[in-house]
Length: 445
Ligand code: S3P
Image (cartoon, rainbow, N blue to C red; front, side, top):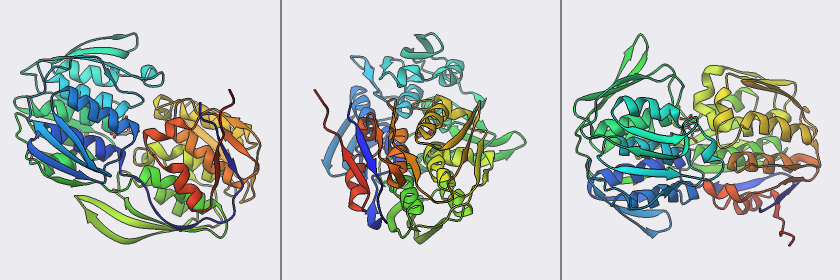
């Protein structure tokens, strides 16, 4: 346990860069391993989740090397060339690594065993077991489709057309990755758009992938028995990490912060749209394209926020940002209503329950619904604070309360900040560099 205490700060000022995008980093490693030849990645996130993917890809026979800060070289084995790992794959806290790599294994004639930490072992895997099972893979899992889990792939697998029952980029990506080594055309239909990094990067690696608008939603087709060409990938800063300094600056009067080089792919940038609607003084500067992804520097100044009803349709484009949005809402004038977010209950923790409990402990008026969260804001005044909040192995819960404590009458302690390293190594140093008041509490023996 690594307790972290947050105290009231004055204005945040400065210019920072957040670590590379987690979703894009995972995909760069996986596709690099399926290409024949050398792929070079710059700006890779070196958080624990991505390191779990790197370790797994080595276990499948690829050469994956770190050559400098954020610089990685991958020598792939080719589509269809994954070897059977000799040991159990420990995916740590990472749902993305687990679900996407299950997709890779599904169309290879190999067996792999996955496990993870207590959080990952609680998360539902049935959502990938169903479609990958239809493609021919077989599974032995704990009850409810939970880890530890064994998958045996089938080659050749059967191409399927699958309509996503939940809006999930992880499920979509797992099927598309399985489709790469499957004869014929594999199709995923999504009713609501989810992050499209897999599609963009697959095209960049030369896969034959195309989309089509149908009455049921967007159909994404990939032609199997693909040959992927290696290349160079530049990973932009993670908007889901940028969200923390952005909201901290927005709630602290007098702040002026520039977060440089942030990915603003529309399937990821919902929080920034919602903050603007709440009255945040937030602007994209220097908009450009980096490695097939839109990027900008985000300028944010402290300003009065007002509560809004967040449209449920926007949820997939900010699914990981609801915890920090709930923190912004705690300082807004009036009520912020977040509905249609039942998926939050199956993330690294039950984020609806964790935010409701933590905010209430810090003196914020909050109502929990089965698929929603309603927060009454202070109108800009500091919240009471003065509580210790549980992180439950959830990096985004830990970082959200570290931000809440920046504008609280009494300190807010997060009981265990160690999960922050899964996605945002250097979070405490980056925030304190801007003027945030954060201190790791030495553990008492
Ligand atoms: C991710 C997709 C999202 C997100 C997760 C990363 C990805 O999950 O919550 O942090 O990289 O594809 P779902 O697609 O399951 O909603």
